[in-house]
Length: 132
Image (cartoon, rainbow, N blue to C red):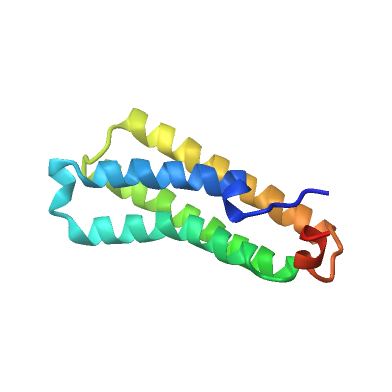
């Protein structure tokens, strides 16, 4: 059985953190710094990936955890959409878009697999299983 002692142990959270740092670096570029709406939207979405994984980890049932992982997955999809906007605004180049989309898709895939695992693991209480 896979258990996580902390949300920091979850690979999707670790990858989400890397993606967020990369997006924050893009937002510091001269061409982007003035686009406050874009910065707000994409950074909120990227931060939400990790935040929802962490919040979900703190729930007591797999069903609750899956719900929060679903929120994280949707935030990841939102980031992907904003990345196309970044390309259209010439904030990033096509090769950078491809790399970032691959990273976001990897996170989405990791989240989907974790969600499926949790759905197939019949535990009435996750905290009881983790602390055994």
